[in-house]
Length: 228
Length: 370
Ligand code: HEM
Ligand code: HEM
Ligand code: SF4
Image 1 (cartoon, chains in turn red, green):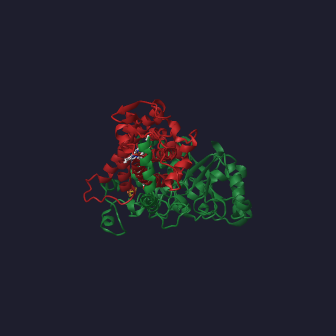
Image 2 (cartoon, chains in turn brown, blue):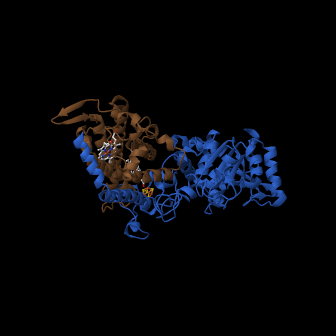
Image 3 (cartoon, chains in turn orange, blue):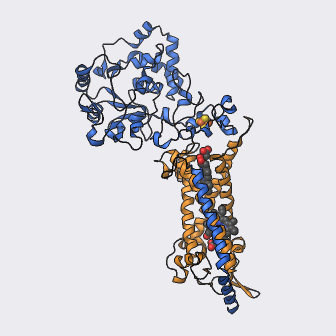
């Protein structure tokens, strides 16, 4: 997949349309949902709100927002899942697995570069190999997150639906354990987001290809050094 | 069901007359039982009729690795109540703690029931059954618990496992489970079994099971873990009288603080009500006097599986993370994970400033070439 799809020349720069609208939309919906889920989840699970009046509905509201954001999050994941099959090559599910890439674009080459062991910036048009693996791990954490979330939700109103949404995966475990997994996985996501944003900024500077811009407008600038 | 019932005891009606229980009290009890079993109130007369006319099923009560807590719960030392008389319709032919007979005499009673009433008596089991090393860790009269359970439960019409230990091994089965303790279901698979977990079980639920049995001749509907749905189908948190304080965000933050005195929610004090299924808030204990949360202590999740391992620490909301020390809460570990990620990013940034300059130059040069 070299830069042969939808190349455009704008002035002296050539651009390529990498992230189609559904990819960008789901990215930012996920960012919003995960932010809301983490803030409310943290408040539900850790240092709590402390109301004065019994008529307040602070905890109830937090749980309501958490569940609402949870549904939005799952809906967004479903759209992205669909687009992994229907979208362009850059959006394909295949990039989650680092196989079939030329040596120069392999995970080990990426790692060498990040660890200052020589090598060049990845200059990938789509995801880098390492990036793909990273998103693969993120996907697994997402799945753990929403299935445990629904397993917890199963306690209350729509047990059958919550079970259908993945709660069944955790049915045989004690709820306290499910809660712990749900709670700890939040930190896995936040840790991953920290790395993700740092690497995005880092690569954006190193490659000068409008990497960060691309997740807003979809276009990356071709530097002429793309290897994969 | 002829000889299944033992005829030598006085009937429930006679007993109530003798104990001075009024008809009114009796009907109130029957209505409460109908409610407990989620039956319409119109079932109350049927229940009354069943209690009055059906004769006592023969019961043997086995104790293995236990603390006798369920026996205590069963015997509730208060004035005779209707419930007690209903439980008295059980003809308890063998119960180590309360029977008058001892030694060979007692064993003869047990053997007699198993032999003469095969498939017709009810076995109630309290305590866990050790499986390790051939079951040597609990022997009664020279026979291992597992051996006794196999004969007695295997030949019973039905077995009722009372308390947590008889359900899933309970305290003796808590890590590292030195005796290989298990519950009745695991020790004697394939029998007709009803579990009443809890530490101890609520005798009120045992009464309701008996009433159901007398009225319909069957055990009540159970969930996949063999617990009757009427008692274990609803979450404590959803029926708790402190729930309004939970939704409001009013929490007890330390024992005896202002919120504690005002009866606020015990969530922050480690209450396991949100993950425990039992009817404690509605059924309560000791003639509906109270239940733990009402008394100001969080639920410890004693009706949930392996609660000594999974619902501990009792005064923290989340379990400890396996493999880390007791002080490492999920949040501390989480902050460590995020901190490590941020630290790696910062270290990398600094590393780049120091060594990456050359790299950037080459990349710019190349671009000009390209
Ligand atoms: C909750 C926070 C975030 C999460 C969970 C997240 C997750 C992801 C995921 C899964 C992708 C792959 C896109 C896809 O194929 O669907 C992605 C791509 C991207 N994200 Fe984020 N993201 C987050 C926040 C951000 C932020 C704040 C930025 C801006 C600095 C950013 C910049 C990018 C860029 C530049 C890409 C495209 C790069 C590439 O895939 O190689 N992300 N992100
Ligand atoms: C990135 C995604 C998510 C994050 C970071 C997150 C975070 C959290 C946290 C930290 C808690 C508190 C756990 C505790 O200590 O008890 C929690 C509770 C919960 N979460 Fe999530 N969550 C996420 C997604 C979801 C989803 C998709 C659902 C499903 C609808 C969900 C449903 C729940 C429920 C039902 C609870 C328990 C609330 C209660 O006990 O009242 N979560 N979440
Ligand atoms: S005291 Fe426990 S069961 Fe009751 S509302 Fe609070 S957390 Fe739920």
